[in-house]
Length: 142
Image (cartoon, rainbow, N blue to C red; front, top):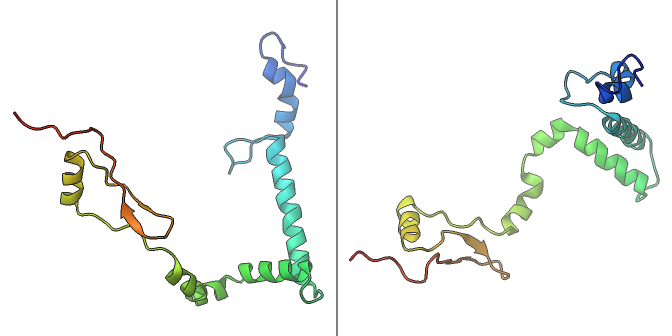
């Protein structure tokens, strides 16, 4: 509590003004509170656990060994950069293709007839156009 503040005039400063003076907002943050402080503490604790798992040798196949190896491989940015997309090329080749791109002329024609240019993948993985008409019949010139 900040007893120098009048609670009738500025209750917030009275209630947490002393904490705020002792815990200023760090320059790289937009706000700072006890939950931010707790998050920072937890992040540092988790980092310590990961670094400790990566620094020691563990029984092959153990959770500690898997966590340590995963952390080491993620932190080895030179190897990640050198590998590029090679480790995931097979997965990318198996993934569904992006929906087809329509020309602006086709999109314009579909929109003027009341149809949507929304495309989605069906359960079989095939991409098909989903026509959503905004009106039951197109407007015709008289």
